[in-house]
Structure formats: structure tokens, C-alpha cells
Amino acid sequence: MKKGSTLLLCTLVACNMGVGIAMAWKGNEVTDVYQKSISEKKYHQDVGPSEEYMWGGLSLQYFLFINSSAYDDARSPIYQIAKVFLDNGDELKTLLDLKEAPQQKNELYFFMSAVCNLIGLSKYGMSSYQEFFAECFAKWQTMPERARNKSWELLNFYFLHCYPFVKNKYSGILTGEKDEEMFDYFEKHRVPKQLIYNLDIDHRASNALTYQDLYYTEGDLGYHFKKDIDGIKNKNSITNYELVSYIAALNYWVNAGALSPIEGKKKQADFAQWLLSYNQKSQILADSFYQVNNWINDSFTRASEKSINEFDYYVAISRNDYFNSFDKLDKYMLKHTKVASGKATIALKKSIYEMAKTYYWGQEKTRRFKEQILDMFNVSCEMAQFWGKDYLTHFITGLIFAPDYPMRDNEIGIMAYTQTAYYGGDDFSTSAAYSQIVYSGRPLDTYTDPEDNNRYNDLWWSSPNIFATLNHEFGHVMDAYLGLTWSAAEVNLTNYQKLLNGSNIYDRYKGSIFGYTNWKEEHLKDWIEISEGIVGAVMLSVSVVFTTICKKIYH
Image 1 (cartoon, rainbow, N blue to C red):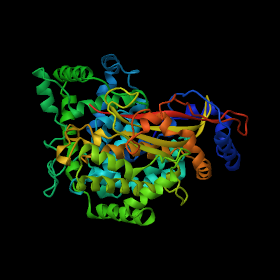
Image 2 (spheres, rainbow, N blue to C red):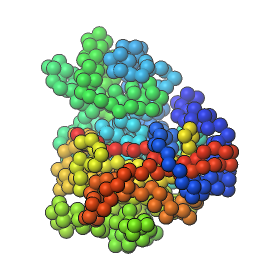
Image 3 (spheres, one colour):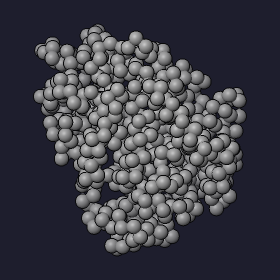
Image 4 (cartoon, one colour):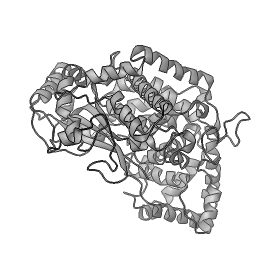
């Protein structure tokens, strides 16, 4: 299958920038723009999301779909399902409040989503490319060794081999030309045959993992269409993962990749009733769904010893290259992220000490959390090298933990968010600038062991790891980091302290913060809108503005 010319996710954005985007690639000229952006401050009101910089999820879905058997098997049931949906597009548009009826020219997005939702196995990860990337990143970094399967092995290949490549090759805005080139690259460089996710096997290997190995309490992992049909007939509540996945895939299809969050059980129930009604007229769709139920079989295939050893070796190498102990990481961050007030925006040991005291953690749980943070930073820095240099530690400007729930100035259910700033102006931007994370301690204290993680068992999260939601938020940082151009990265190296004081995470979060007991009383002042900026090489306004907030929602 060749990727059609319609898959130009950010072409309109690039065209609207006109000559401005061309100037963004001229080294010293744009460096001058960034330096002026930092030194000449102006206040600016926040603008809408710049998702054209957070394209990691799109890249990952290209990779996963191309490396599945559905990619080159025209007999795959997913194509028959797509045909039924296409033939009944107007009806589904009304039923599911879709943006428009599905069109054949964009069906690749449907195929990608349907297959990738199986590999990612996260309802939350279905909601957008950004959440899909973050969930897969967390799954890759935190999955316990006993549960590492074929899906994990594919993610391991992507993050160890493909992420560094696409970062160095395509950083910045993902224009239509780069989008096409990246897809073609994945097409020409498929994984070894034994690593292809096989959707066609009708049984599991004799040495396959069990669902208990994967920390689940049932064996079909949400892919049980006959059970759903029986449930529909008996008017039971329908919350099946497979049905939600198809609603998500339809949204990807009609939005050509730009997905709005999926909402409510009503749509699921209506969709389920529509499927039942259609199956009473034709068995074609039901037969295809029954075949799709076999797709989950390869998720029980064990990851190869070679892949597991490669990951473990990578963790060890990253500790050697960056921080070989939690204390060294903490000491570096305390100095590296110190702002004008004398406080550090990443004070790990101090924050964890207060969390452990507040939540009555024992030494073992505290040790596990410290080790996970250490590996999260090390592995991320290793894979994020840009032309052989470390820029990631000058891209993240804050990681603070709050005891508050609900979080200050946020609705109930939101326990963390990642803010990303961009170099740009009112109508355009040239590069991602930096990211920072605000995180409530509550989700870190929800579970004691992976077996306790009921939201993983419900297929909401992709990893049973009890601290995985922090890796999820760091996944948003790594996604945004793809949007950092080399020129902007170089400027961040020499202007990091200005960025720290300009972004001022303490002014942006008004609640309590672990590690600073009296912070609440000391910092009750008005919200400061931070942006900088002024004139570039083509006399275009440049500002630093917060444009993307990826919030973690708990149900």
C-alpha cells in the first residue's frame, strides 16, 4: 500500500507561514530570532494548540501499521470492515456525530488506528496522536520484564532505533514533504520478518505468555465480539475495547488524523446497536469481526531475548553516559534548574522525601520510584541526542509534584499536565521551545503492586507499572522535543537560565508543591503571562507562548 498525497498533516500550516518557515531553516538568522525572543520580553496572551510540533504519535502509527501483517495482506478483515463503514458512511456520520462521512482517500488513517490500538492497548491512548505516543512511551519504559511481548518488542525497536533517526532527520514542524518522506522511509526499512505483528495466526504458541503474565484478569483483552453481540441482545452495558477502538479509528479516518476525544457510553451503545442491526441483514461484518478477534493472539508472543537484552543494555549504557545514581541526578538538577529565587524547578530528592512522608511509603516503594525516575531521565537523554549532543536537559524546564487534588485551577479528574512552549508569534511558530510537568502525587500513591492496577486491567492504561503515569507525562515532553529545531536547541544551551526564569513554573502553578512547605504562602500573586519576542529576519513577530497542555484525566 502506498501512502496517498492526501496525508499532509501540516501542509496548510506550513503554507500559511509563507516565507517565515523558509527562514526558520537558515541557521544563524533564525538563531538571532530566538535570542531576541528570549532577551526582549513582551507579554502575550496564550494561543491555540500547535500540534504540528507533536507528531511523534503519527510517526509511531506509521511504523506500527507498516510493520503489521495487515499492511501487505489485502485479505485482512480490516479492509472488509472499512468497506462496510464506507458504504454506510452517511448513517455512521449521523450516529456518531462524525465530522463528515468517511472517504476512501483517507482510509489509511482508519487502518493505522485499528491496528495500533491493538498494539498500544489503551483507551486513553486512542484519544489523540499525542496521548497514543505518551501511552506507548510509558508502556515501553515501564513494562515489567515478565510481561514484555511482541507489542513491547515493536515499541522497543521504534524508540531505540527510529525515534533517534526521526528526531535528527525531521525535527521541527512536520511539513507535508517530511511527512511523505518519513512514511516512505518506514516502508523501505521494515523490521525483520520475525518481528512483524502477525494478525493472521488463529492460535497462540505453546510457550506463549498467559494473560496472568500480562497482569490481566481475562484472556481476550477486550477482543470478544460474540460476547458483545450477546450483551447487546440482552441490553447489557457495552464498554468493550474493540468497539471503542473502531469509533476511535472512524474519528481518525474522517479527521485525516486530527482526532477529537471520544466521549461517552451512549455512542458505544448506539454503535453496538447499529452493528447488531447490520449483522441481522448481512453476516459479512460479523465474520470480519470474528476474524479480528484472533488479532490479539500475537500479543501473547514473548518478546525475544535479544530485544530484552538490548533494552537492558541500553539502560545500563545510559546510566554510564548520564547519571549513574539517583543522588547524582538530583544534585545536577538542583544546580541546573535553580531560578532567581534560589529554588530549583526540579528538586527530586526533596520532593520524593515529602511524598514518602505524606503517603507513608516504605523504603522499598521509595527506592523503586527513585530508580524509575533515574532510568526515565537517563534513557530519554540517550535516545534524544541531537547530532550527538544532549539538548533534552535544556528542553525540560520543570518537574514539580503537588499534594493537591483536585489540582489548583483544574477540574476534578485532572492529576497532571505537561505544558509546552513554542518560539513563534500570533500566526506562526518556528520551533518548540521547552516543556515542563506539573504532577499530583495522588496517582503515585494509588497502587502498591502491578496486580493492583485496575485501570490497566480495564485497558485504560497501557502499563501495569504503578508509577507509569509519570512516564506518560514525560512521553509528552519527548513528543514535543521532536519539534525542537537544531537552531533553537543551540540557543537553549546558552540561554537556559533565562528560559527558566521566564517560564517560571512556580508562577504558573498556584497550589502547594512537595519540597517547598511554605511555597503556598510565599507565592500567592497574580498569574504572569510569559512570552517574549520581537523581530525576525523577515520582520515577523516572534514570541514564546504556552500553546499545548496535555492533561492526564483519571476516571
